[in-house]
Image (cartoon, rainbow, N blue to C red; front, top):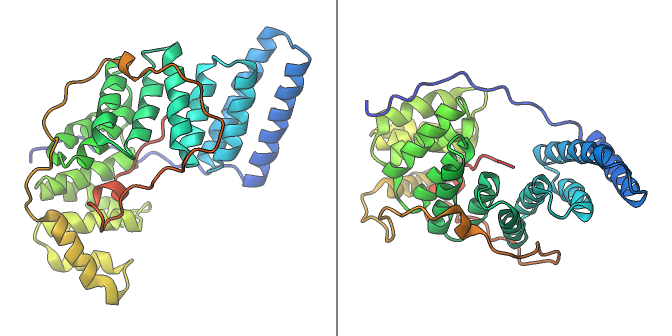
Length: 318
């Protein structure tokens, strides 16, 4: 087979803390930070407080509470406007709430302080994925140039290429991401789907087959598995996989849609190799907007474009 990426045992998934306890701890720390700010605490103690409170923001993002993460990060920024970690967290929180323009502004401000920030370039690229895959690819390429160990940037670079229809070109970034972070579920799923769409069905099934019947199987993974089965000519098995989640009256329509994705088509415009841009090109001197910008448009649905947008998954990196 053409792809021999070693499979690794899956990483354990950690359960987020209970929402009530997380919110209580987060608000308590924000209150404490605000109180300390007004009384001008010792600088060393303030630094320690900032690190602790941003750990709570991490937990809030992992626990699907971006509003709390936003309040925490902005509490730090009110006292230290140039704090890069707080800006990364603010950008991630804005992104998670669908406020793309604010997220982009936060990451661009971070880049104005540190033009080679791989974290900021990765966050910026993830926002750009929603509107321009070529710009996103350049941002992820810059992130990788600034930090070749950034597994999330490699995964997201693969997504950007898939969104452009460059399925074969997407597999190498996914494989590199798995070398850096073995067992990352989202990346394994992404690689499997790209292999299927690029015509390498057998290798795709090596990834997606075990995932589709494993403990972390989901409707999304089973759909990707069905694409790989269809690519391998195993139509009956693909139908069986889809039937787990799709009602009988919609199965024929689903099968037709999935088969259309695999139909040969002319390469989309703009699939030529891109020259990576310097990391400084992403830096724009601007302050994060605090208003209410337009909410990000969601990625195209399966029927609107291709199966790539909803089926490929970005790895959070903040």
